[in-house]
Amino acid sequence: MDNLRQLVEAFIFAADSPLSLDRLSALIEEPKAKIRPIVEQLQQQYLASECGFYLAEVAGGYQFRTVVELAPWLRKLRKERAPRFSRAALETLAIIAYRQPATRADIEYLRGVDSGGVMKTLLDKNLLRILGKKDVPGRPLIYGTSRHFLELFGLRDLADLPTLKEFTALDPELAVADPLEPEADGAL
Amino acid sequence: MDNLRQLVEAFIFAADSPLSLDRLSALIEEPKAKIRPIVEQLQQQYLASECGFYLAEVAGGYQFRTVVELAPWLRKLRKERAPRFSRAALETLAIIAYRQPATRADIEYLRGVDSGGVMKTLLDKNLLRILGKKDVPGRPLIYGTSRHFLELFGLRDLADLPTLKEFTALDPELAVADPLEPEADGAL
Amino acid sequence: MAIQIRTENFSGPLDLLLHLIKSHEMDIVDIRIVEITEQYLQIIEQMQQLDLDIAGEFLLMAATLVHIKSRMLLPVSDDIGEEDEDPRAELVKRLLEYQRYKDAAELFQQLPQLERDVFSTQFQCPDAGESDNEENEIPIGLYQLADAFHQLLKEKPPEIFHEVIRESLSVADYIERIVERLLQQKRLSFREIFSAESSRNQLIVTFLATLELVKMHIVSIDQVDDFSEIWLALMVPADQLSSISPEKDLLGYG
Image 1: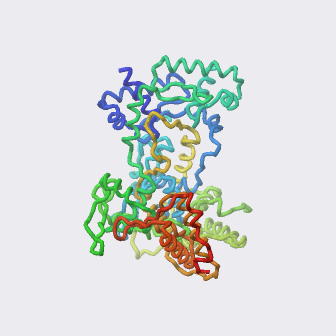
Image 2: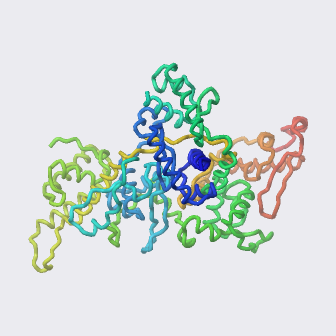
Image 3: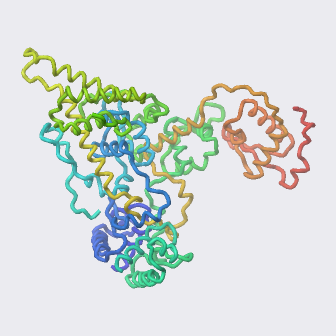
């Protein structure tokens, strides 16, 4: 049993992206039911030990990540500054994240400006993906956020997106469109 | 003091190569004499805890590494990865997807290099299929994409592929800005 | 009001409009349309005076505002039906929704970002097996697929016009170039020997040079199947090349 814990730890550490329970189960050749408690135990353990990193749940998987409080120190490690997002990019990303699947026309209607360039940049950065085509005349492409988007922002899944302020009860249709449960804990 | 341990741990964890005591001391802005015992303590601690990784001393520095005994397991990580493609494979697949039915010569014309090896890999991965022989002298084989290709890219059929026109419309340098059209079906 | 307003500070006309609404302490759901239109037009004019490249989108919004204003000034006619819609309704709806995503963008900015606020290990596990040219591997999706094809087509632009510049292109020089490349690479595809930016003349000379090399039994030509790639390879060991290097004059191409 202890060996299993060690194996889970090593796999998550060595993987280059978050490992899901399914993936862990396939790699270790043990049922998920056996692996899940081990992962949960590891999460507790790292939190309790005040280690420099913790076992985060992101993008449907698990990954060791440094604790947020140390960010100002750790940035010294990277020579290049982390790329910052322009306001246009963040707006576009937000619209697609909450509204997906979204067409380019949806985004441009909301933003009021041509957004092709921003979308291309986000696609190049692998933050967006093309989901297919919409079943309306002209069959426009529809877009959604990628797995990498979740990884970058440390989200477990799309339901983990921060809740948006409710609309005033102006339009009941819009209130329905409100997705997203509140986050369970602020651990991330 | 505990914070210092956390910081050392996080630095070593997040660095892309082994961190020397000198480097750690410079990053943390504390004398080496203060950092050395912490590192040694961490080494002991990880060994004692039978963690999946340990604090190795390599190349004049310190780095977390997975436990050597687990190597046979960890190799599976690379073998069973989410599909990722080399540029050559992606190019070849793209040409066949858009130009099918395509001969090997068609592909090599566009890529400018021998593509036999890549095509074989793609055939082995069941992403391509042989459609028949072309009715020209030499009767070269003609290729198309497979059902599995559609599944992998989440396409219903080939008509779901983004057209080049749609694609270039994203690139502001290539396309005149599209007029804004509020969406007809009132997605709001 | 002497606020310095610059388009680049706003991500679009809705953003500018929201700013004006806020700075005039209005309620989004009850915009004082006459006042806001005036303000908006003033700013647009300022931008024009500064000879800024005003995006069409900003002008489009100006037109929308003026249109709403004129509709609000018209007396409400009874004929059209009881539920006359507020002319501002659609704009208000857009503004409210835009405001929401603007807030969301702000939230995103504050989320801990990988490689900015949190870091994962960069350790490439040597025990995980040899990484066969892993750095070249790309995640795949429809975009990556379409992009790959698009890039290839961009690299192979249709031949348009070539200005004819008379150059003294010597076949002998080109023979040397091809041999040099073959020494480095052992095998070259027929296409590879032509560089992409070659002029027509250069292509011809390259071709002649290739023929010469074959004629001199320095280079062999292989083709696996009809119409498949043609491959060139050196037939002569490298150390013997110098002795059979052609005398430039003997080739007779000038």
